[in-house]
Image (cartoon, rainbow, N blue to C red; front, side):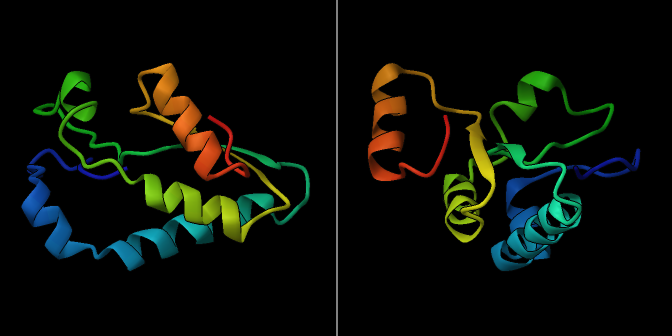
Length: 109
């Protein structure tokens, strides 16, 4: 989640330059490792978009503006085969679901 400060204004261009994709993925994996470390939590529903929290950013904006990061969710599923990783967000058709499952069988959609 980003943008919890009232003065924060999310812009795709600005975010991409502030937080690189590798850093974003590193933060995600660190979180997953921490939560999964006790062995109790093994299922992760990963939304393909970051969540921007703030008064000036609506839920509809959150579904359109932040870029989809399917590749990060796929990578997480490959790197943590002992976990159940589900892709959540942006797949809107059965054809899209089939494509994801055909290309990445380790992923849940």
